[in-house]
Image (cartoon, rainbow, N blue to C red; front, side, top):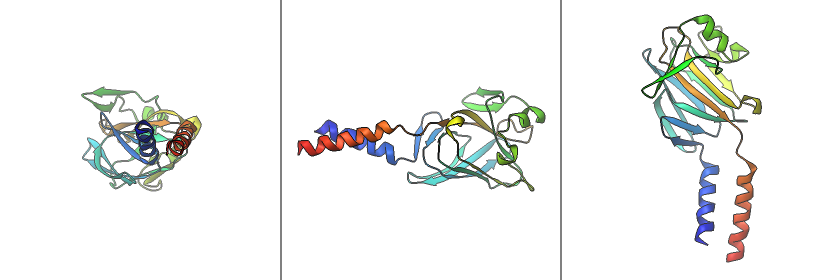
Length: 184
C-alpha cells in the first residue's frame, strides 16, 4: 500500500510541476510560460518567470528544457540586447560551466537564427521585443539563445526541446488508482 501511495504522489508531483530545477543551472519548464529577459551588462541574460511551481527570478543564462506543444514567450525588458533563438549549427563553447558563442561574425549568427528569422529575434523596431514559440514534434532537439550584438558572446545559453510527456504516466496513474481502490 505504501509503495502505491508513494508512486501516486511522485506521479502527481511530476504531472503538476511546471518548473523543475535540475543541476547545472538547468530548468525543465513543462508548461508554457512568459520568460522576462533582463541583463547584466553585456555578460548575461537574466531570465525570470512564474508558473504553478512559483517564481524564478534573475536566473543568469540558464539551460531551459521546453516541452513540445506548449507556448513559451521570451520578452526583453532591456532595449539594447537583441535576443535570438538559434539552431545547433551555432558554435558554442563551455568554459567553467558557462556557455560562450564562438563567433562574432554577424553572418554566421544570423544564418543560425530559426526561420522565419523575424519570428525568432526580439530586436528593436520594426521587429517586436517578444518571441512566441510553440515547439512542434519536429522541433525536438537542441538550440541556443544569444544576444545578437556580435561582441556579447557570453550572453548565450541552451534551449532543449523535449517531447510531450508520455501517455504512460497517465496509464501508471490510472493503474495506481485501481490498485488503491482494491486495497481499501
